[in-house]
Length: 113
Length: 114
Image 1: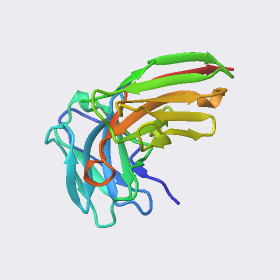
Image 2: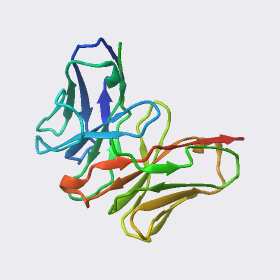
Image 3: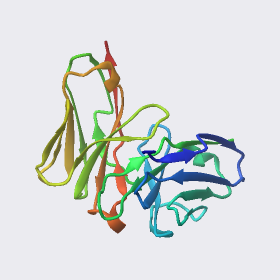
Image 4: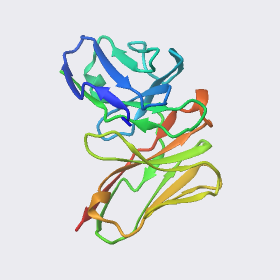
């Protein structure tokens, strides 16, 4: 049973560029959340997707957007990258209504230069 | 962004010692979770707590959900080298569904010397 998988594992982008990160949830999970983890910090909630819609959003600008597909996989898009967007981006999945225990992927390390 | 207060920030111990760390919040949570994160990896769930006062064990790990619902602690007994990593607490203010975002603590770095 595959867990949460994310791609790519590492990425280097230039300021002002756009980036797309991908996540496949754990089998049987239909809710996907995205978190940003800066170096030396705990993860910060970006947003959550359920039934292909953004259901809840953290304190992140509109440059951060996402999408969920019918197979429950998800994408995180960041436009107009800033140096401060450099972080580990984590995807977490949960089964709707059955558990509050989120399972995390290994993350995508984004470096903006 | 909001983060929970976690202490200590770091611990350097000898193999075989017991470890205790805690997490406090200004807000009430209905669920407390403890995660361990190794370098370059995502957090891995260790223990989940759902009820105020609940004490739950997972092998050498024991965690408690504070009575006030604003704090939690994690104990590790007889530490071993593979316990090395960063431990995060996380609070959740819902029982699932639309309110199950996690608020994480600032993390406790644990180093174990053989």
